[in-house]
Image (cartoon, rainbow, N blue to C red; front, side, top):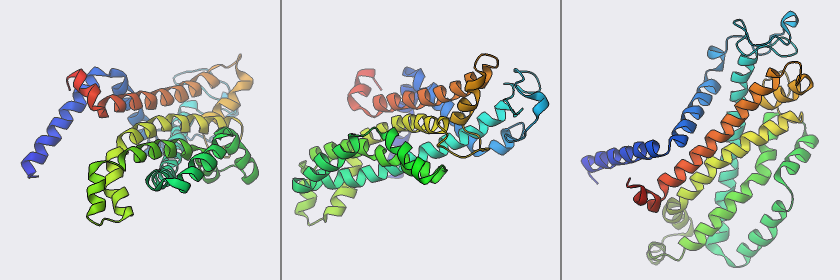
Length: 294
């Protein structure tokens, strides 16, 4: 393909994405919010107006004011600063959980779907069902309670049950793709199994996996907030949205801003990634694009 053709293809794809964004404003709004959260996570020290761990007891439980836009918590810490630093924890944990779960799911699902037979029966019937028989959040709670809180333990614990959904999706896609003509042609030309999976099968099944990963980010952020709310997330004084919710529940009636603003941050992050997942599903689906005229 020439450079001119590549450029025209990129322009058409860009126009298609913009048209899809105009037709799906919720996805565009979700993408905007996610970009804001990523900026907060990357540049938190430069954006936060105050130190999120700075204690100022005379200003404890202050309502929103000019000095503290969203008020202060029970130790006088600025809520805006803690929300900004909390975005760093949520984005870091969520992206690491999705990346590790996706990598493990791609490997296990591809092997089970491509080879089939006894390997597929063991992975699908024994291994996946064993992990799915227990709620993922309970596995994470048990692991972190045994190993202790911390970002690494939290990511590992949430990834223990998160890979199953990706593995099931990849397995089903590989089962359908391994019998197609281009795979048979590559096999007839002497390509190795590894090359067939990596170069021919995975690029053709990656679209639903990307959609699943976007939606999985929402679940990972919610799970991190849940673990932090239970005291099994990052240890204090590190700011986390779930920890802020746990600290504020004792002051729900006398200082509701301690709960409202962290809850809104979690809700907005989860909704944003769900909107992005829906938008990606519509954009990557050729039938939906043809019906929308994109």
